[in-house]
Image 1 (tube, rainbow over the protein chains, first blue to last red):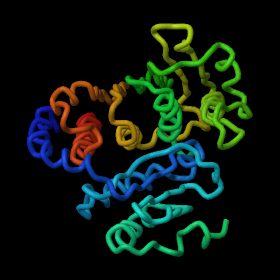
Image 2: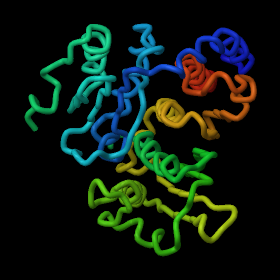
Image 3: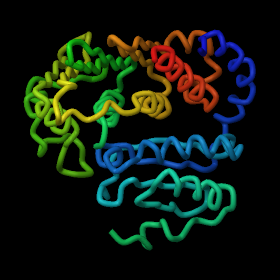
Length: 123
Length: 183
C-alpha cells in the first residue's frame, strides 16, 4: 500500500528538476479531450503520451496537454504537435500504440509519422 | 462510450472548463444502486441553461453545434431505471457558485455498462488541470477508496505540480492499492 508520506520523497527528488522543466517545453503535444475525443478513445492515447514521453526522458522538452473539441470530431482521437519554428502537425484516429510510435519516431527521432497524419488518413 | 468511467471523465471535463478549483467525484453503491456525484465550484449555469442541458442540440461552444455529454449520461442512467439531476448556481447570481450532477444507475439492470477504470479517469483529470484539487471516493460493500489531492499538495509544496509524471504514477498506485486491498 502506498502512503502519502512517500510524496515527501518525491518532492525532495523532483523539486530541482521540475523548476527546469516548467521553464522549457519547446514541443507541445495536445490531445483533444472533449466528448468526441473521449468517446473515440482519447484517454488511453493521452496517458500513453504521458507515459512514453517520461520513459523516453523527454519531459524537459515535451509538454503533453489537453484541449477541447477542435471541430473535426470524425477524425478523433486527434493529436496536434506544436514545435518551435515548425508547422503544426495533426495526427488523427490515434491509438495508444500509435502514440508510442509517434513518441519514438517523431519526438525522439524528429520525423513525423506520415501514415497517421490528417492528409493521409481516410475516414 | 464503452464504460461509465469515460462518462465520468466527460462530465468532469465540464467542471474543468467551468474553471472549478475543487472537483469531487463520488461513487457509492448500495442495494444494487450506484450513485455518481460530480460536484464542482466552477462558474455554474443559469436556470435557463440547466433546463436546456438535456437537449443535445444545445451547447455554448463554437466549434460544433451539438452538446452530447449530459444527454449521453442521462440516456445511460435512464436505460437502467436511474435518473440524472443537475443543480447549479451561476457565478453571476451566487457567491457560492458551482454545479452538482447526480446520476443513479441500477447495476443489476441488463443495460448497465461496467464502471471501467475510474483511476485512469482521475489521473487524466489531474494531468490536464493540475492546479485544481480533486476529491475521489468510492464506497460499497466491497470497496472503500478515498483520495484528496489537497492533502497531497500540502506535502508536495509549491514546487512540484500534481501532474509531474512521478506524482501521477504515485496517485495511480495509491488508488489501485486501495482497490486491491479491498479485494
